[in-house]
Length: 118
Image 1 (cartoon, one colour):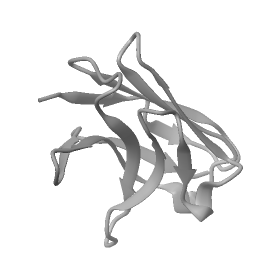
Image 2 (cartoon, helix red, strand yellow):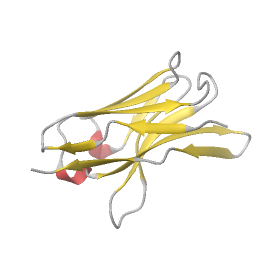
Image 3 (tube, one colour):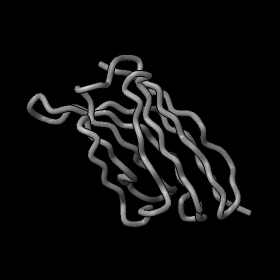
Image 4 (cartoon, helix red, strand yellow):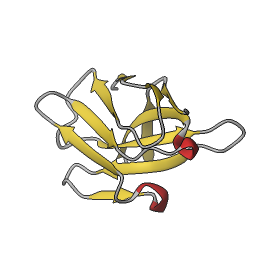
């Protein structure tokens, strides 16, 4: 098992930047694929970005070119750099780690709120 704790959320003006961090309680290297999801009020949780154990990444179309996901296996951390933020990016952001055994097993953090507003 792994426990995930997010940090870095807050209030930012449109066009601003935030960096979210996710600290894992154990080693993620070679085991867990990791990602960030978000859930806005009244909407379903959606994938924002993902980085696999091999370093491959994919992004939601809505954040391509603005957000960058990265992971530090030595520090067991996952980051989401968010630039050019828009009001529609407002949501609770959740860190996710998963592996296949063979079915997918997911672990989630409790989330961090990002509010983009002037």
